[in-house]
Image (cartoon, rainbow, N blue to C red):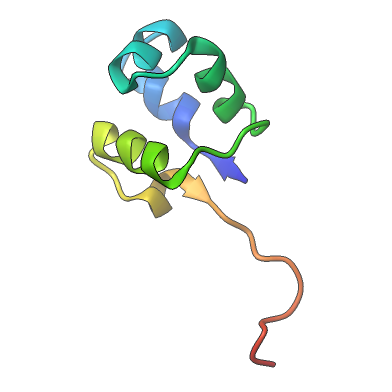
Length: 71
């Protein structure tokens, strides 16, 4: 899943460590989210969205694969 966490964090002038402390996770977690190696829990995704005053959908981009189930 792609995301805009790194871009938003940098726009606020925060290091990974500073951002991690603010959302109460490790710097490694922030790094893994930014590189797409880790998808955050729904609770953490909401925390990140709240921190940036954005919706989850504005930060995390989910690309559906294949056809719609209804087709």
